[in-house]
Structure formats: structure tokens, C-alpha cells
Length: 220
Image (cartoon, rainbow, N blue to C red):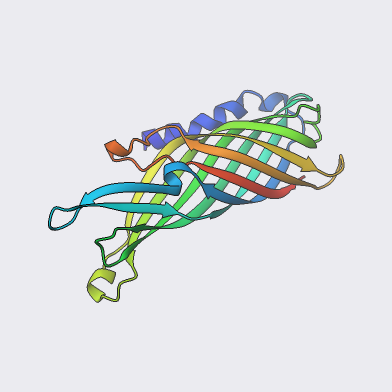
């Protein structure tokens, strides 16, 4: 719990120091598509069958869907500090050539982040135009495994095996806010997320949760 609490607080450090000097915040919502990359997209694990013969099991995750709630605090013409709350989920499978079934995978996460937004055209107060974003997040993840594709009451009676992990993540990306100076604006954002802590597979950790996130939403 102490570790999770420390991860929860870290992203807020970026926000806390500048809130008092910030102008009126901009609230945003978005629908996100997540494209797994690296070991999160596909990871192979060696194993041995009952006769001692080696085989390779492969885990893959598919396209994920999620949503975000953001509050952006402009602190000068070119800089804003953003609080980012988001959640997402992806389904996947694990297959081995010696197994008569597949293993169903599901990954879900809740992210609490603090971002820096840089508006090179000096439009941070209006949250308009091109911007770059970089930040840290506390990632609260859940990995579920269950058996599937086998018509057997014995195998299907197994309960879901769940692993929970709290890790620190980082993101870097680019976005654009379309519209007029007042009222609702449409936003598009592309970011790359990478797990920064507790991703040592050899030590028993899940692989780094790396993905490209495309967000489509609105900001007020």
C-alpha cells in the first residue's frame, strides 16, 4: 500500500507547484485507441512439455479502448500543466503448440498522471493549436488469465488468475486543439506510453506496458 500511495502522489507534484499561479483551467474528455507495442504486443516464453521437449508459448494483446478526463492549467502563453485521469482495457491470448486450449488474457489499467503541455504558438491560455506533451503517471494495472477454447467442465471450472501491479509510467507525444478561442474545441492527440518501473520479466514482473495512444475528444 505504501508503494502504491507513493506512485499515486508522484504525478501530482507537477500540478501542485503551479496551480496557484494558473489561469482558468480547460476541462477535456477523450476516447482513446491503444496500440500495444514491443513485448506488450507480442511476447514469447520458452517451456517444456510433459516429456521434457522444449516449446515456445506466445502471448499477444489486441487493440485497446479507453477514455480520459483532463484538466489543463495554463501558467503562461506557452506552458500548461495538465492533470490526466484515464482508463483502458485490452484483450489477448496465450498459445502454446502442445496445449489443447488457449489462455484468454485481459489487461486493464487506471492511470493518474501529471503532464506538461508546451504550446509553441503561444496559445496555452486558449488551449488552441499545436502542442507537445510529456508526463509521468501512476499506473494501477490488472492482468487476468483464464482458460478458453476447450469443451471440458474440468478445465473451464478454473477461476480467473489475477495479477495486480502498481507501476510508474512515462509518456511523450503531440496534439492539436481545433476550433475558436471560446467554447468547445475538438482535440486530437498521439502519445507513446512506456512503463518505467517493475517490468523485469526475469524477476517475475509483467512486461512493460508500452503502447501508442490515439485520443479523440473535446476541451472546454
